[in-house]
Amino acid sequence: MPCYDAGMKVSVSSSPARLACWSGVGSVLTAIPFLIGTVFHVPRLPTPGCGPEMIFWADRLRFLVFLVPFACGITISILAEKRLRRGLKNEMWQESVVELLRRRINHPVWSVFAYLPLLVWFGYAFQSKLFHGTPLFWFLMAPTQTISRLRMMLRPKQVAGDRVLPDWRNFKPIQSEHWGEPRQNSFSL
Image (tube, rainbow, N blue to C red; front, side):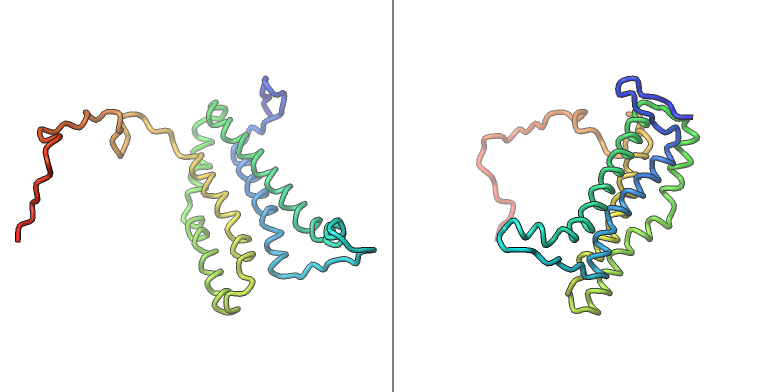
């Protein structure tokens, strides 16, 4: 059952897993133009004249094929991640539900998937002598970046006593008995 945000009157999904899935769908949609750019050649259409305005007219198919999925994917991904972040901040879901998603996102398969784009890109670049490999890399990298962002969002909140690194605000000020004195060389030949 969806719950409603009183400030925006927008329905927010009650499942963090569903929002994470929508974020993944958005990242795949964002990546599709890069795959199309790698696999297919999208032609320029004929134009009735010449001039700078005709560049856009000749490339209207390219704009449609590349820009529409990219813009839709970015929008879906950003909205889903924003709602997920807001839900985690406001603690809209039970900890058991969030912990289940946390375990799914932290599965080792996703770590392997994070290094896969680099391996595939290096293989493709070696095979094709470094020509036209960049769109394939970004096609594989967009979902990996989404998984990274989701992992960062789903990290459990740290309690002040659980910090691994010390908090710099708790250190005493630096003091020295030798301030203002010339530096002494510790090396002697």
